[in-house]
Image 1 (cartoon, rainbow, N blue to C red):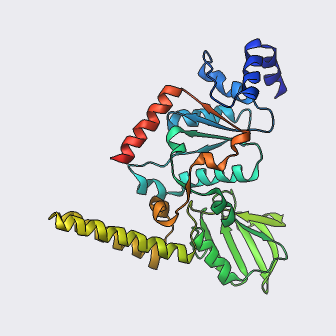
Image 2 (cartoon, helix red, strand yellow):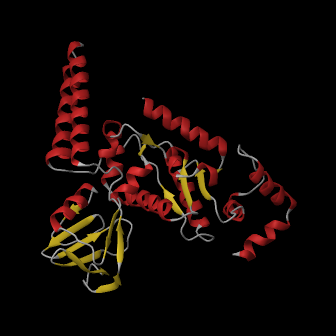
Image 3 (cartoon, helix red, strand yellow):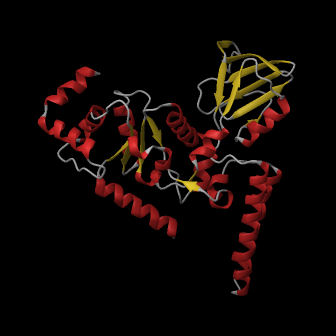
Length: 329
């Protein structure tokens, strides 16, 4: 890659820009750079230690930047924003969730990384970074593992139990064999037990069930973005029901019986799905009821060693203002 980055150092303007980045902690405006050259410029400014967040104004533009930037850094990840207006339909599918979990995994494992998102992606409320990291399961050959307890942990992480794993986000327990298909992996893992000790771990092909690679250790990242213990889940459900009751009574006093009934019904359905059925998908839509401490994507980075690149500043800020208006309404 030096063939692409070293010629930039011969430009006086580029040298001035790098010098300004080292001295200043505020914003620096760069103009005159065409869209096709932006990934090249951003990568050339990498000093090898800083992480980068590239923020743009639209999802399609973000995808274009990801594709272009991966020419310079194959590990660059896209963090898609959640759709405020269609929140439930957004989180039911695990494709976008997998993209977000992969981005969080990259931030957790790499000292230097590049995340590309939209301005509204920075505005998404998230659990604290410590809560996400604490939820990651580490399994190694020789560990002691109780199948029932491990299955409950996987369920808390948002994995769905099935007789045989077919797609990412599923797990199965058959005697001394546990299969789990993380959202962050292309192939599932098979954990074989000898009594309560992990005897072997290997990745395998879903279709043929043939082994791909023997492993000594694996990390199982959550299959959802909000991981809750039983106590936290129960407390959050109770908070939702309390709020629904308060709002419902307010509507009844205003003779808005339909609205009151609709709120109580929605709260009861939520309590059944999140409580009795143990469904994790969609819980992060109620994040404020489950987590007192909330964060944004920026909180997952070290401010002292992170550089934020804002693509099309005016349009990006307009996107943020539009998102805030939609959320308020």
